[in-house]
Image 1 (cartoon, rainbow, N blue to C red):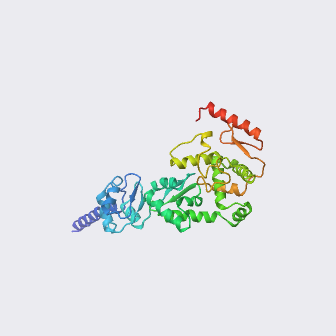
Image 2 (cartoon, one colour):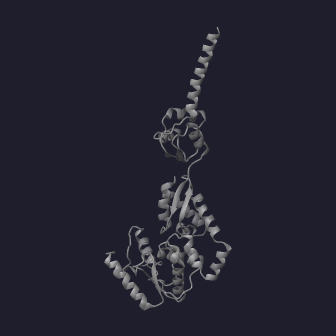
Image 3 (cartoon, rainbow, N blue to C red):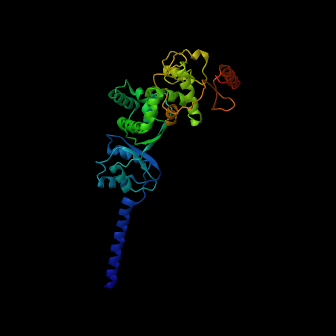
Length: 341
C-alpha cells in the first residue's frame, strides 16, 4: 500500500515538474536567438509585431501565448525595442507593454542647413523628413521666424540620444533647453560687450568653425582676425562663405574642394567676398567652442590668414599684405602640386 502511494506521489511530482518546466520555459526561458531591434510604429497591428519579431525569436507560438495572456495583443506602445539574445517572452512582452524602448544616437554635425540635418536625423525616427521639417517650420513661425532654417542657431554640434518615436516638438525642445542653458548671464554680458547681435555672433562662429576645421586650437585667433577685419570695415573674404553660397544654389550636391577666382562673385548675401559685413546668418550648425571663441576672441593685429601647407589643418596669420601674398602663393603651389581642383 505504501509502495503504491509512493508511486502515485512520484507520478504527481513528475507531472507537476513537467508542466512546471513547460510553464517556466514559456514564460521565463530564453526565447531570443540573436540581438536586434524591432520597430513598432504608431497604429501597428498585433500581426505586424509578430512579423517584425520573427527573425529574433526561437518559438513564436510561445511568444503569442504569453502576449495574449498579458493582453499585449491589444495593449502595446510604439517604439524601437531591443531584443537581447537570451531574453524571455515575459521580458519582451513587459517591455513592449510598458514602452521601454531603446534610444538611438544622433550625431548633429556641421550641417549647412536645417533641411540637410533633418534628412539625416529622420533616418533614425518614425517620421519622414517632410513631416518633420513641416513641423519645424511651424515651430519657427510661432517664434516669429520665417522658416526652420532660422532655427539653426538653436542646434550645437554633438551626439544626442532620442527615441525612434520622437516628435519634432520633443526634438526641438531638447535643443531649445540646451540653447537657453548655454546663454548664461556671463555669456549674455559678453554678448553686450561685443557690440554684435546674437545672429551676428552665430554667423561669425560658423565661419570660425569652418575655417578652423572644428579644431579649438585656433578658434580664438581666427575669431579675433575676422573681428579685426569687420571693425576696420574690410570685407571678411572667407572661403567657406563662398562654398556655402554655391552649396545653397546646388542644394549641397556639389563638392567644392578649392575656391577659384570665378567662384568669388557667386551672388549670395552670404558671400563675404561679394558683400561687406557679417552674413545674415550662420553658414553651418556650430559647436559651443566656436561661439565662445567669438565671445572671447584673441587680441592681436592679424587681418590675413592662409592655410599652412607645412602644417595641414592649421594656418599662417599676419597683419602684412606682402607676407600674406607670400603665404598664399606657397599654399596655391602646394594645391597645384597635389592636383587639387
